[in-house]
Length: 150
Length: 244
Image (tube, rainbow over all chains, first blue to last red; front, side, top):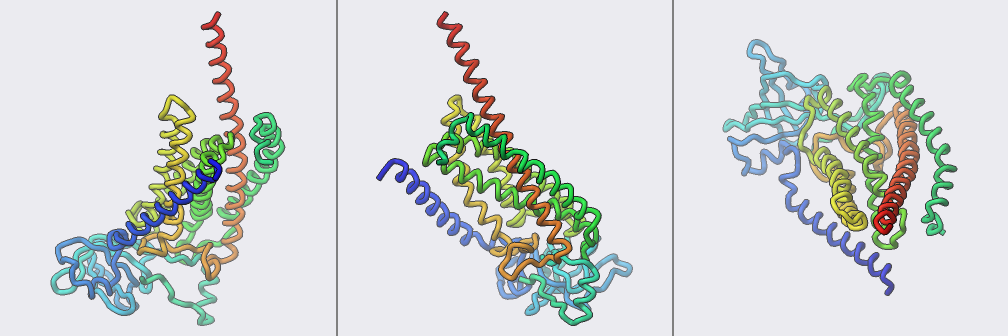
């Protein structure tokens, strides 16, 4: 084996080892790396404490958004199409917030199952199109709500 | 065959021939791309005119990953085959890549405020790109941290290769974990999720940015080579004076 060959093998082996190590670490830390939990995670994983801030992500359920009246509080339900979490939020919501839109909500889960939000972020999806195309898709019935609700 | 371009004079001739073929199309494509991106493409159905940030943000992100990959490959070639130009090319690429990464982070932040409602979050995509930016800075710092340039080159090359692990993590972070950043729109199995009226200007910008990088890389390699020669000459002069 020439010295070049040896150096090449060493680098390939080193990278493979590092890759495996990184994969193991990232898999082990999965719960820490995820930016938000889904409503299903919140409902099924009981270990989420009620006094700690967590993030919940999902779609704003159609027909649940109650705009603020006197108390300046938005009320809506976040769903992943399996479980729902009722949210109340006092503050300014992002421009693209609407029903059916993906959102990520930071706040605390109350003992009664309600979620008191301190921050509401809109999650944009990967689809980009001109308004006319979106309109045409809606008319032809080909509009799919496939926004990422993981 | 590739070894013959280790000769600086030959490399300079090749660079001088190639330069206009990169620089001119880069200028034209970026100008045309920007015209379409800013004036002659439709607003998005959700984002409105804010979508125009994408035409700079996405190509910058592509370049940030592409330049790092090229840097890691040159570093490996430099370590394994000891090609004299390999470390030089990595050294020339690093600041360019760092700038693309910075533009990517900056434009992303400017887009995030009106769309998401925040300048920055610590999700997997944003954090891994920030790490990429620090890898570029670390590479440059490490290269200059030794009195012996050859040692600096080797240490920085090892860092570049180790840091390459981050590149697939950035690309797939949006698929592996819940992130605020949206999943891939262009490079994905089911085909692009961007309407062609937006995809074409995006590609024009992408090709323009790539050619711009190539032109800048050749220019920086030439400059670094001249700087190295100037250093060599002044050292020789000092030796001569000392021996007289």
